[in-house]
Amino acid sequence: MASDTKHLEVTLETQVESVNLAEEMCLRVAEAAGFGEDDCYRIGMSVREGVINAFHYGNQERPEKKIYLVVDITADKMVIHVLDEGQGFRLADVPDPLAEENLLSTSGRGIFLMRAFMDEFEVLPGRTGGAEIVMSKKLPSPGGGSANGQGGQEAAPQQGA
Amino acid sequence: MSLRATHREAGQVTIVELSGRIVLGDGSALLRKTIRGLLEDQRKKILLNLADVDYIDSSGIGELVSGFTAVKNQSGDLKLLHLTKKVRDLLQITKLYTVFDVYTDESTALRSFN
Image 1 (cartoon, rainbow over the protein chains, first blue to last red):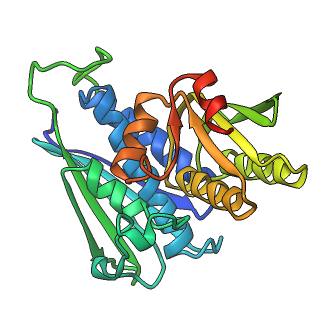
Image 2 (image 1 turned 120 degrees about the vertical axis):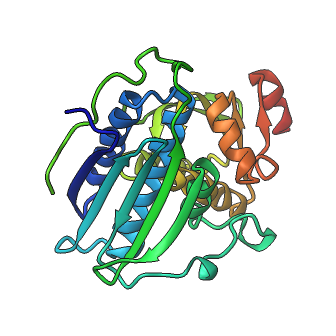
């Protein structure tokens, strides 16, 4: 039976390879949901940045910790959750990378990019005690097609945690 | 696609040809190694050709900034050539487009080092 909601849930290791893996999985879901090339780029980049944040800042690159990635396709948007097992953080405490004094900083642009590329973005206290990034992108309008011509017909893959 | 880097000399300027993705992991590490290696060889005028780089993440941006600062700290110059649209947009929204000297023509870029 067809469902309006599709769900993907994956547990990732705290390692660099998880960044590429998460990006690739979410790109497939986004393409199947009908997003065009530009939106797929933005979604892929945001997932990368979310998992980099969990890998580096949340889990402090400690291999015994996990990263939890959840993707939902609802009736009107793609929603992505990235949860780490770190200490959590408040958005208000994240320095503005566009401030003059931070322009030449070598880090700290991931949150900014996710906010810029997604329609909705927030950071919640996660069930693990770490940070849970929740971000979403509105689905393309029906019949709008996509730049790669592969929009909207395939179901999102199902994968257990 | 992983990052590849080669370089050639044009007078005192070293042109580094990059292709692939500058992202967390090997890509960022290779960019760092390449720039640090040039500085060790006293090559302090560096032009990064990004024509074949269509993807940079925040780690790659950080590595570009780190390289820029390292070269400046040794009284050198690091400039960018042939940005793809995605990379240019990324540098614009992060306000780094005004920090780097960016060129669309190699000969103009080379003259700017004099």
